[in-house]
Image 1 (cartoon, helix red, strand yellow):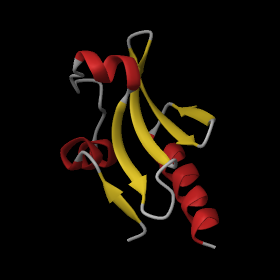
Image 2 (cartoon, rainbow, N blue to C red):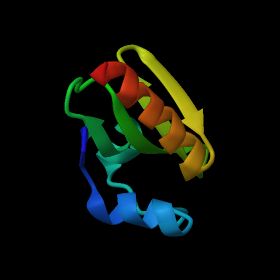
Image 3 (cartoon, rainbow, N blue to C red):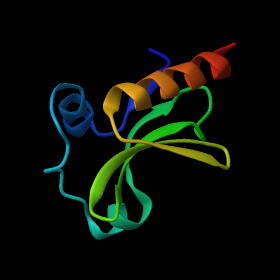
Image 4 (cartoon, rainbow, N blue to C red):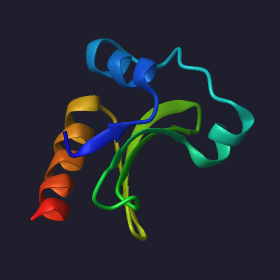
Length: 87
């Protein structure tokens, strides 16, 4: 595995069912909840964020950020980035 999971409970929930019931701390509301991060490049991470009351997934790498509504789209993008980092 070329990534490490930061929040196992929410990471697993996102794969099976909606994450609309996930509660954020005040800090997570501001910065997002980190779900996974690349072992090779710590600037590559997958977050769950709150955007105007809706939960979205955010793939962040260096100074870029891309939002996704669903887990599979976000995971595909994160996995693609992981492959780039590891090659």
